[in-house]
Every structure is written in C-alpha cells, then in structure tokens.
Length: 164
Image (cartoon, rainbow, N blue to C red):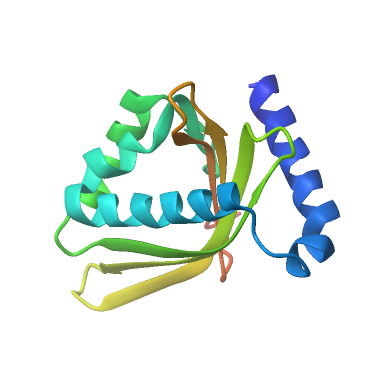
C-alpha cells in the first residue's frame, strides 16, 4: 500500500510540475504510444467487457475507490463484473494527454469519462468526470495500468444521517 501511495504522489507531482512544459511541447513517440494504448484500453473494454478491462491492468494494478483500493486481477474482475456485464451500463473514455517519465518506465494518461446506466425506475443516468491512469512499462515493452483513478464532476451525495 505504501508503494502505491508513493507512486501516486510521485506521479501527481510529476504531472503538476510538468503541466506548463507539456502543453508547450510536442508529444514524444513514447507518449503517443501511451495515448494510443489508453484508446485501445477503451476499445477492448467495449468489445470484451470485463476481460478487456482486466487485460490492461498490471498483475498488481489497483483501482482507487472511495472505501479502499481494489488490487489485483481477480479483485478487479470481481468488482467490475456487475457493471460491465449489465446491458444497461456503459463506460467510455477519451484520453486527452499522456506523459512519460524521462526514464521511460512510468507514465500517465488523463482525460474524460462517461458512464451511463438506468436507475431503478428505468431512467437513463449519466455520470461524467475526469480520470487519470498511471502506467508502467512491462518487460515485454507493453504498457499496463498500475493505478486507475476517477473523479466525478459531481460529488456523490453525503451518506444519510441517523435521526436523533
């Protein structure tokens, strides 16, 4: 867990420090590969649902969620199966930016996502937000997600309070 926190903090610092310089320079070839890989992640999720989603995570990859991170392929598969097998649910995203560390082993992508589902009455409900995926280059040269973070545009409602 400490490793995950340090990685997340480091990548966030990298993104903050590089924000102005990244906007004023052309993407490197490796950053273009990472952006394309994130688009392929989206396409694989649309085509193969849960298995497409899981296939882009590193073995020890984590999805950051409000109560606790969900780590590892089996835990991620179990967490995402109810949503991604529901015909009334969809999750799509479009990466807008990629950056790779100078050493070329770590990178991140960020962009916008849209989730759609039906509520209990059958009404369409959309959720939009910003996401950031942290990636690690694997020994075979592929990129895998090590941390997935989503931030909804609207804060979730507060939990109900107990009457006094």
